Length: 394
Image 1 (spheres, rainbow, N blue to C red):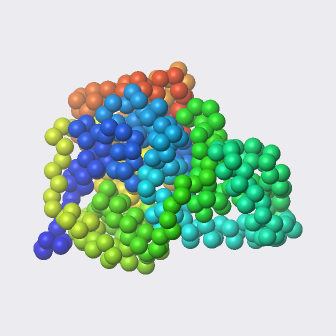
Image 2: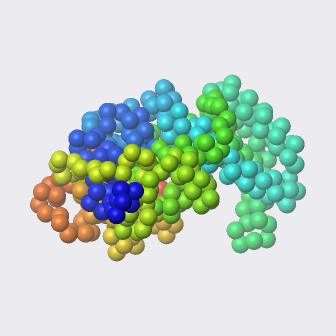
Image 3: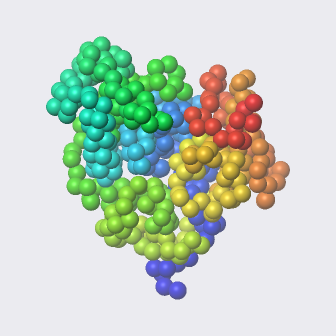
């Protein structure tokens, strides 16, 4: 077999994951920016996930909450915005232009068209009216710096306009212009999520005007994003890449060619790594354990997950929409689940005991104490709850 088709087995994939995702003890990061840069994107639809994902990867997790807040809301070195698959993520700020051009523009055009169609069907005002309201709302947001939807509506009352969505259908509902418009502006890269109302676990948030960024060529931006992700998560299959990006397969293939990705052999078939990453990677010197949150970017990183997550565990670890719950890891694979109880205790359960001895259990217990230590008085309930998490938290 030629070098271009070197076989990369499960053990090496787990070794790469341990080091590149900052999970092994010696590979842990010094700052939230380092964590986000290593992973490319942190899931941001559940605010607590961002902090828990960062805390799991910091060498000293004691400063997780203030340091992540600083990065997101003071220094703005991290930004929470819509990205791949129309999902909210936290990215390094220097990636905003790349994300916007590579994935946001296509989704944004579809979202705006859908909003205008829904408004027209309901007899609501037209596109010219919506543009006027949008410009007024963005000007108000720029004046305020950060604002909730309600605060913006106080400055621009037309944001309170309502229209009936899907009239006569079983899912009929009343939509407020502010809710739908701010979502569209988010995907268009004009606004981003700001500081939450309340603590770091709150899902109520303010909006802020997006950081200024250049408009990039879409194909070049796709190549840049795919190259970064493959350096962090490679090897990955074409199916993994299509799933993670949400792009058409033709876009994935064009980006792979543009970065000169190298094919390798995986148990699932052909995989890809970035040029120069074909050689073997040795694993961490010490065994490692981790407690990762619901929607963690490592647990959700690939579409084909059998190399780190036994298929038998999926029914209890995922919700009906395919969102993963909190997971317990040992040496590069998911071995259990964890939750926080109402009194703050971190509880966990092994679901796959193969190769998990007393040392592993002691390491997992130490990680549970580590999480409890920095989370402190905060109470974290995943936004998307799974069967085993609910059972453990009860």
